Image (cartoon, rainbow, N blue to C red; front, top):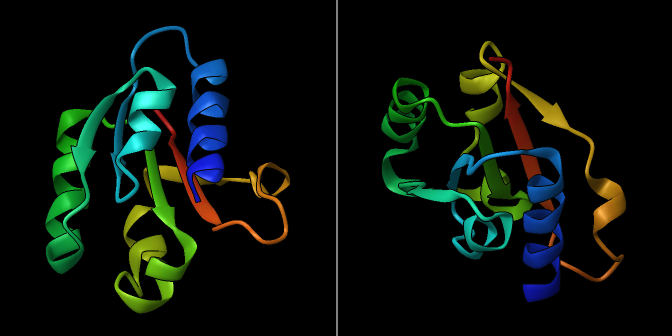
Length: 105
């Protein structure tokens, strides 16, 4: 799992010039990306997404398994302001998978 988090973090770091604000449930992603962390509240993720939009979050990163279990309509909530990045090439077959959304702004 750590290798996947590290890989996603470094991928984000290579996409950015500054310190991006990242909403995530995988906290080390922000560390490896050299960004600032905004913690995803899985119990009240709608509030987290609203706060992310207000604060100008650049990326949202969530574990794929949490999308199915805890965050069922997250994609619908973010699709207006964020677009899904294809990062499937970053995860090995047996690693935890992550979904990455980048701000449209």
